[in-house]
Image 1: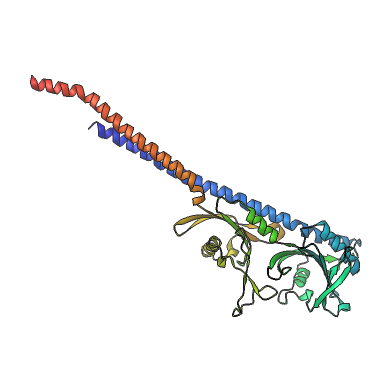
Image 2 (image 1 turned 120 degrees about the horizontal axis):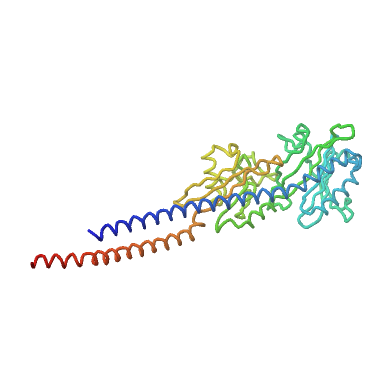
Length: 385
């Protein structure tokens, strides 16, 4: 009768302490995951803004120079050398281009080996797109070939030239680059309309940056132990990810779907929920199931989902809004990355609780024995009497 109340009190206190410790550990895990995911999302947003700032500044400054009459956009040889110098100054920029209302087109592109290629289309080329290797002064050198590419109707069903002319403001487009034929990359292109001094529309300026460096940045991120991040368009197509996988997949000869083909017809943009990476695939599938489509995610969401009894924390937020891009950055982290330390603390707490319970039982037994001893002596004496 004396030992049991001691044990019950100790058991209640120890159990409550252990339960509160476990609940606090779970809250700490959720809080840490949320803070880390938000920080990673902010870093992705900042890096994207830095990558896209230079192309936007180049097209904006070129448009201003043309409007003020400082840059003669009709002088193609002068433009070739000027664009070439811009590429040498801003080494992260892939290309600078101009297309005008007279169906002329000029693009100066920098290859991965540092060489510069000039692509020109005008009446003198009979509407063919001629390509030249630029010399050290930025002028046309070796002739590399020609094609029937029409820059003013690219792509045929959604021309960037017409879209920019209608918008009358800068727009961004994603373009597939085949600088390396077997390794296509995504390129973000900023298109800027330009006007003469009379404020008459004369054409479109363009400048691009390869998203391969965004891909490299995501790979360099340390997201817990095994966390991952990826960037996706609103249509669900993958832009870049941290697992090193390509955002393209190779088409077999029997695949006839053409809606998202790259320009050489052998590669297709990869939807995030079809990614070869298991975590990326499951995270994208969860978001589509939860919201219906990526278009319905308008603000930061911090959620969790389970796959094969493994819990994952997911943070998704719109990025690039200031550039009118409206992409989504998704950060995924397994709960197991945070549980090692928490589980260690829980084991330590459990051992302390077991020790406290043992001590409580021993103290209760000794206390009851100390109290009961004189009572038992009195009982024996009374029976003897």
